[in-house]
Amino acid sequence: MRKSSAPYLFLTPALVLFAAFLAAPIGYAGYLSLRRVKVSGLGLGAGARSEVWAGLSNYGRSLTDPEFVPSVLRVGAYGLIVVPCMLGLALVLALLLDAGRTRVGTFTRTAIFLPYAVPAVIASLLWGFLYLPRVSPIVDVLSGVGITAPDALSSGWVLYAVANIAIWGGTGFNMIVLYTALRAIPTDLFEAARIDGASDIQIALRIKIPVIGPSLVMTFLFSLIATLQVFAEPMTLRPLSNTISTTWTPLMKVYRDAFVRNDIYSAAATSVIIAAATFVISYGFLKIVGSRAFSQEN
Image (cartoon, rainbow, N blue to C red; front, side, top):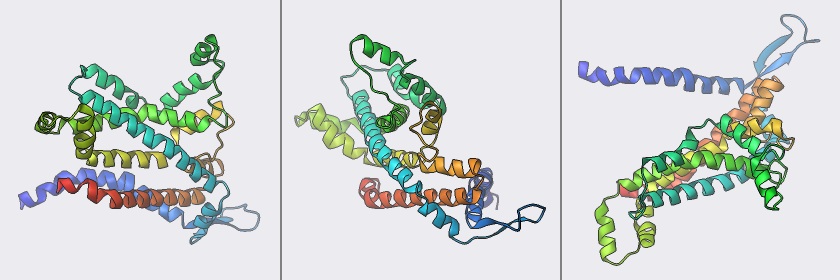
């Protein structure tokens, strides 16, 4: 009896925290997305405003909002920049660190990983001041050699400016994941390949990258989810530039609706839409590439 109940006792704290801080808020957001406020008369008095059933009307309002689709397209363009660049850099750095001819230690790995430890708000503030032409040392250095630096916060460059912050902060984490997977590969495979005359590049392309396929899938999935939930970087840079609107990303639209317009019902509906889209995209990606990438684990 004690043996059968022991696992549940260990799981209870995690299940309680999951239910209280994740499941319950998700359920409450779903509930709010189906409600609305009904105003009677002039809206004055204790019973003038009441919460009533709204059905799917909040979802219709969110999907037909003229600012919703542009924000989704903007996040899509942002993801096309961030995910390939971040994972590409992480893979190259991991392969270089794993190469037998490179002499690196803990300091190099820590230096590459360190930007990930900087909170997104702090990183955005630091890069924001580097982007401002009047205070940026980068602009001064480029001006000293006769190069005119572009305005990173202008309408044509702001998407790349936000993407740069995410790439700078996320590459180190993905590099550590991939480097750990590379270190787990048996060295016998490399020795056999070198005996057959394979170069380091051939070993990397034909052995290392295929073997760490599951880790690449995992890092891609994490990066994809983080891209769909981008919020801190553009929200922090917004006071520094008038090119970032209050609905620059879908989550910024949720924040505006909930805390500026005080329309928590529409904000809840948009949140549910974002969560559902994240789940569908993640699940679809795993169905497409997961079976092939994880086939070697079976």
